[in-house]
Length: 156
Image (cartoon, rainbow, N blue to C red):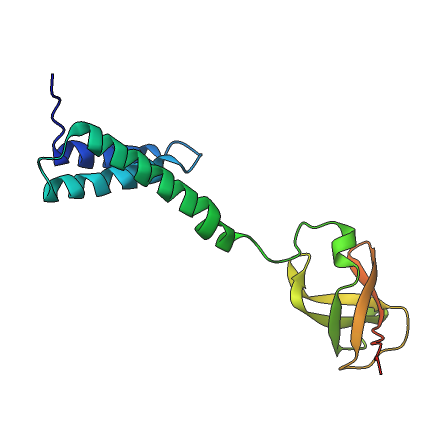
């Protein structure tokens, strides 16, 4: 028995899989649906294609889409901030003093990369610092970062 799968079958399957993604939290049905839509367009162009070839194309496209998602596109969405990282990842971050004379003897420091989700922090300084000084985080005390002047070592 020769089963005939028309292009509209692939379009319905593709849309159904993509809609299924709305209720499934795994973000995989989308790629199977997208592959089914592509197979539908291919079958429109080559209507004499056998069902077995259609299935193989769908499987290969589904796997390709899923691999491309996990290897190429998904890493672009990773948060590059230091938010949620442990204490050890925060200590050693270098910033620049942008304001002094705040309440409770704090100074305002701006970091080039966000530290614990923010690029500016009110910090406590172990030593006297001025606006424009480079400082390094040495500890975390409550809601404050503890800083000291950053010493750069020069190699001659």
